Amino acid sequence: DTAHVITHALARDTLSRLRDVETEQVGFRKGLVKLGRICGYEIIDGSMETEYVEIQTPLETTMGERVKGLDDVVIVNVLRAATPFVEGLLKAFPRAKQGVISAGRDEEAGMAEGEFPITIDYVKLPEIREQDTVIVADPMLATGSTMCAVLERVLENAPEPEHLFVLSAVSAPDGLIRVGEQFPEAELLTVSIDDRLDENGYIVPGLGDAGDRAFR
Ligand code: U5P
Image (tube, rainbow, N blue to C red):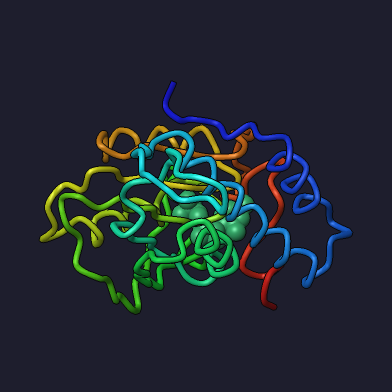
């Protein structure tokens, strides 16, 4: 019970297209944008409250609802694969602030004891406040090495936010366990928990290298 799986039928449909090796770059990017939007709606539905507001329709005054906290959202884009995913999230959270972290696995160094060394090149984050909902998005959570390095930077010198979501499209059990152990306050959200990691640290069945499929 380490993670919450987003089971919306459109999320499963969209992820299946992303997995398909026949889905080329434009389709892949569009799919990630769509999946980001669906995941954003699921986050709102699952964890954000509404308040009642009086509204005037063209006919009469009635009670309506408004989602609370939409001004207090910070989305962290883990470059580069998360960029289209975050574009979709921003459709659900149009007033979110966006942080950017360039973090990547040193794949030349290789995987040792289930972890990769992580290089962080660029970090630009908005201020994080207690009332914020922070969403750290990376389409793939494999060994969890990237996410743990990113979360360390996001949380240093910041108060504990109201919500800290770690959002991935595809995750591996090992990575979820690692992130859950190192950051127990994080709420892990994913569209699929896949079977395993291969010897190169790729998720199987997975969808391949998300950054390459979106951008190369
Ligand atoms: N990654 C993929 N596909 C995989 C495994 C990893 O694209 O099957 C990339 C992702 O872009 C992500 C990072 O940023 O590696 C996550 O790997 P890890 O640090 O969790 O091992």
